Length: 226
Ligand code: ADP
Image (cartoon, rainbow, N blue to C red):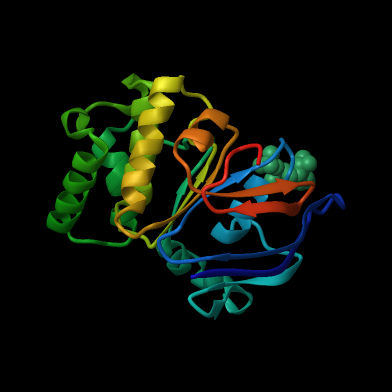
């Protein structure tokens, strides 16, 4: 479903963040991207999300080459991809409902359809009771659930998450990762950049290790260290 070929990303300051990456991700796979800070994990997610352009190489989504994607097509392409950002990027003065409905309103869905989708997804992430709360009033774990709901509300085939447990306590982190596993079990392909060793070791999945922009290990049912 995702094929990454000879992908290179050099930032304008000359820093080589991704150095000839080859990676195949099958439909419905769950992958942890691990590796030290600065290894290129966020950059890889950003290039897949098309918030960064590659310097060379290509990414194919179901045989469609992203090198053929025109700037005007990017919003349509992104409908295939849910992104969970490291810094949440929620609308703080708005309700849970509005935050999740936002993406569908932009797509001009009718109100009844928006209501149905938002209700279903809030049920899935366990936030139905907070639907009218302003997001700034909610805990870190609840805010992360909103981000997940927002990312999957139009049922994209691919979900990318950048350090989704980075600022959460261990128990909440565990709950968030269980939720991502549940979403994956509905055939969504999931890529998670993480430093969370205990989660990677406990909820075993494919582990891809990046170091200095290169893939140095790729193992099914891997652990954080080997
Ligand atoms: P990770 O997510 O593994 O911590 P990143 O992908 O965020 O790594 O960063 C990889 C490297 O690229 C880091 O050294 C970082 O400083 C550099 N980098 C990231 N974004 C930029 C940018 N916009 N301009 C220049 N260098 C960047």
